[in-house]
Length: 323
Ligand SMILES: [Zn+2]
Image 1 (cartoon, rainbow, N blue to C red):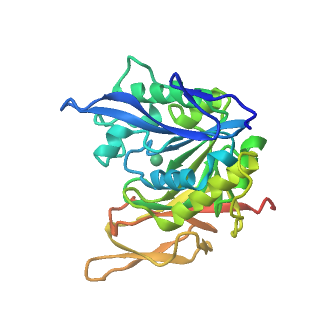
Image 2: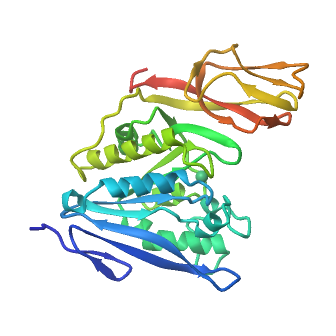
């Protein structure tokens, strides 16, 4: 026996204990081929919160697509309290062209809340806000490093909001980074509508980075458990480090960059973390950490110009909630 009513999505009913697939029309390609936003709605058997899981807001960040797929496979609608709305590919236009952006070079994550009469990105943003975000209590938005960069699995969120902070620590990634929202982002719009949101970053574009996928799947299950939506989730095995200050170590010259440290490694101020040299290895110049911190991201393309961001460091302000 279910204690709840069917969930209404896009004017259709999803029965308690069931899931249903939707394709929301999102427009057409110049060829006339229709594009749609794939959405999976899982209506739990008991009443509870409604959560969204969004991936590929940047079309080439496929890590989130895989995280959402695995999470949706692991949860059983017969054992869920609440509703999960999975939107694994939000930027469908960028996804089919393996691009971060829309065909007009706009960034979907600077186009929220969008409008029905605006540019393509704004229309897509509006569709997501109206159909998904507006009917949810909270959400998780999955991203990867941009361009030729990879990121340690991390949550970026507003740590000054106690409820958001609790969600981030329930997720328990290796690193939580405090970040204010930028106008035009999904996160900014969500917060304005009173929705808590965690932004996950991990891995690199156009790749399934296994460590990032694992951290994303287990963290999402822990968040669902903490919200009382599922009973079981894998416990975290890592410390949760918290940062309120991140800085890029930039290339002092153009050349070929060799990283001598690893993602997630803690490095000390003044230590060498890599070297930039010419193609034959001559005139090598040390790359030095300018502060104590954890490597939260780095360039994966060894060909660098002066000024390029090489290694992204996070100063650790707390370990497992302790200063
Ligand atoms: Zn992104």
